[in-house]
Amino acid sequence: MRIVITGAAGALGRELVAALAGEDVQALSHTALEVTDRRAVLDCLDSLRPDVVVHQAAWTDVDGCEREPDRAFRVNALGSLNVADASSHQGAHLLYLSSDLVFDGHKDGAYHEWDRTGPLQVYGRSKLAGEHACPPGSTIVRTSWLCGRRGRNMVRSVLALASEHETFGFVADQLGCPTMVGDLAGMIRHLIGERLPGIFHVTNQGEASRYELARAVMELAGHDPDRVHPIELAAYESAVASRPVNARLDNMALRLSGIGLLPPWRESLAHLVGELLGMREG
Ligand SMILES: NC(=O)c1ccc[n+]([C@@H]2O[C@H](COP(=O)([O-])OP(=O)(O)OC[C@H]3O[C@@H](n4cnc5c(N)ncnc54)[C@H](OP(=O)(O)O)[C@@H]3O)[C@@H](O)[C@H]2O)c1
Image (cartoon, rainbow, N blue to C red; front, side, top):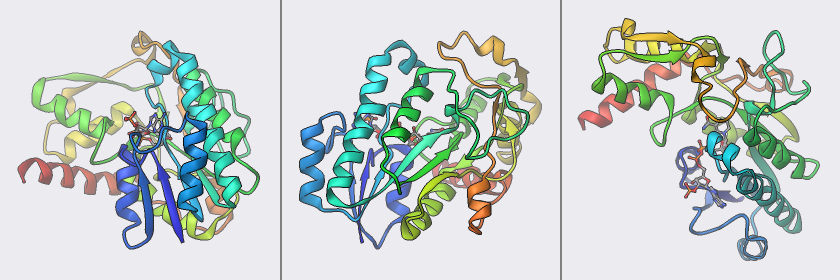
């Protein structure tokens, strides 16, 4: 099975390449493949002839997308359409990475795969357009609050803030499902093996506010968690794009399909913080 990964030099991409060690993987960085270049995408997949395409290249700067909607839709919507079309030409199965931000956050409780979408910001709308570009039979994975060894993420931010500031704040009135990139990569490996069609919410189990997550990171790193203070999402709304107060994803489709769920986030967070501290010391 030949697997092509777009955006492979990103935070998830690099973890995915590691999780697929031993497989025939063509890891395409942004430099190797610009997904907005339709001709390049068609030619590239024509020469590589993949069986599976994992399309996770995206412009992930949520506030940047709000400022430059054309760029957001060019990459996340049109780029996804190019990859979807080229995958169909090759008869390749497509797995597309999407986001919790396709929802508006007004629901009481966690969102499942059959809930109505309603993104609040350009990023979410452009990612949803990417979902709509996927041909029938594709696998769509919606995930949230990614934390890993690379790239900008909350866990790395908390560890950096802890070494630079005595106290700092994180939003306490927004709930989501923290997800460790390594766990997600393992599930993607499983899903492309099965080639199951449909939308799957894939997160670590359990919910948290960013404030709770930050406190957990502090505790695991041996710092006083009281150095983190709660702030309101409204105060953070000086950010350009709106964020939903409820970004929780119920992994209903995995559950109903009898596929094992990812571990609770606190369990996997402990491994990640240990790894990050080890990397610092090493
Ligand atoms: N991070 C999260 O919390 C989160 C949550 C839900 C869903 N997701 C989704 O998960 C996927 C991976 O996210 P991530 O956190 O790993 O993001 P990331 O680190 O920003 O990686 C995205 C990759 O896509 C590349 N890319 C951007 N524009 C491109 C283009 N026009 N053509 C080709 N490649 C392009 C980027 O390259 P450059 O850096 O060189 O531009 C980067 O390597 C994305 O689809 C994202 O929407 C992420």
